Amino acid sequence: MTVVVIVKMDDERPAWGRPALGATAVAVAVSAVLAALRLPARDPTVWLEALVVAGSAVLLAAAAWWLTGRPAGTDRRIVLTWGLGSGFVLGGLWIAEIAFNNLTPHSLSTGGARGVLDNVTWAIVGLVTIAAAVGVTIRTRRWRSGLRAGVWSGVGSGLGAALGGALLLAFLRPSVERDPLMRTEWQQRGPGLDLATYVTRETMAGVGGHLWVLGVAQGALLGLIAALLTAAAIHSREEAVDGG
Image 1 (spheres, helix red, strand yellow):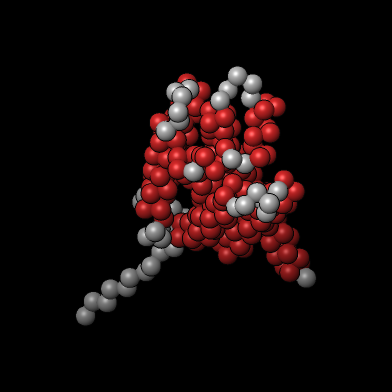
Image 2 (spheres, rainbow, N blue to C red; image 1 turned 60 degrees about the vertical axis):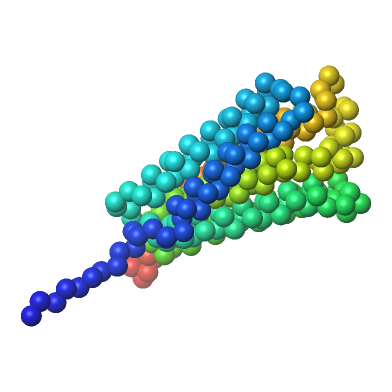
């Protein structure tokens, strides 16, 4: 009698990962191009920004799709579940922050309130990214896996934030134009530009910044630091136990 033992490896990817990446990236790309199309006056700078954002989102998702589809990947399930999973949750938090700043009554979303919310949101994003990297490093005993979790968290949060900004421009730009703080900024910093073009240029640049700087780059940096420090602490503790 032959007994077949099936071992479930931890390198299996979660089923939701690739569809979520693809759908979010496509939504970002379509919304960015639609925002440029719906601008009253054609502007080359806006089109350049929109195409850069759309192309970046698609390329990022394509790279992520390939990485998550490789036949072998150490600790892939826990890395993606903790990393990308936390990233998409943080992306939702960025969307909520964007909605508060641009869609709530202006008596509520004052400059002071926005500043506090921006700082709190950034702090939460950073702490959760660190927690994901630390948790994966502790569970796997591999700092590289913790780093990957931080990067994936940044990918998810960056795509989520970019989606919020792109959707805002594509469908709700007039709400941004009615913002007194934005109109004041436009009058001070946008001579020669109509309000719609100024709003789209500035917001589209912010979309790209959220995707790459506050998303991928921040996730990689925080993940690296957190994973290395955690691995060093684990190693020191194990040496102390062995020495004792």
